[in-house]
Image (cartoon, rainbow, N blue to C red; front, side):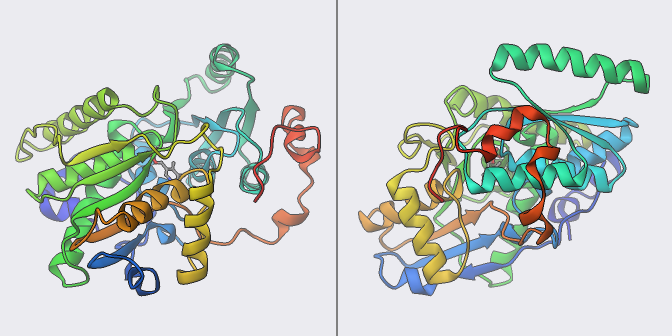
Length: 365
Ligand SMILES: *Cc1c(COP(=O)(O)O)cnc(C)c1O
């Protein structure tokens, strides 16, 4: 099911797209948490279940990004992220499955169990992994690795920006917003008064806000920032919104030109804590509550922070009389057992410290 193509059939011909996700993802009411809070309804959009092998929010973006890579007849895809990037892993899993080589250009982040697991899984999947100590080294690395690829393949790799948050990637969440509204129409949930979602590189939150605006729905997206402000800020949100709107209009002139919804997309800066990937106490508490009450696994880098914002807004009485929706962006599909015994020494040397005691500061998880 693709709600965007249903609404604008012309887009189906014009926008390359590879179906990867099982859509629509379920919406569930979390009564065990809701009853203890002064609000009218608490729902979760289960994008942790976007696909059977590996879910999470990146699958929706990759439907359009890999579609574009295929249209451009790419051999290799190069993408970016922190060492434990869910986006880089999702790109490896679905890119390699579709016959692309996948190159991950990574930078350090605090060690955690989820970081180690993602690294092992990406390597086992066959991704080419590189780790650079800082932005300058990364930049040189990109020139070097892309140059070698160009020489070998006769063409440069297809570039997917960090988090998959280009206009093309954001289309996945324009579609997701329309999908949620179809679930509202079907009576699965009342129209939410607020959607809380983690904001890393903004493709998810901007795509959602654009989709709601496109449908003329007033559904404020509360985008809880979990990355540094150079990646997630109001100006970037505005630019990505306009680029995504322009991409849609270029493909189908039935798509209206939309004004950036000032109240439809609110960036929240108060849950970031000490840094990207550094867990906070409220983040741990929110993660624990969701696990114990609903059996849904969150983590401390993204979803714990976003759900903490919802919980604390509710506890402070700011959601009285309202229906809140938490958009779960984290993969909850279990990793294959073999990952537990996969030897980290098969990874390039620069990654070994993540698995050794002398490695980067570790989050307790
Ligand atoms: C990448 C990611 C996000 C952030 O999505 P953006 O579109 O980059 O803002 C949120 N949650 C999880 C679990 C992610 O992996």
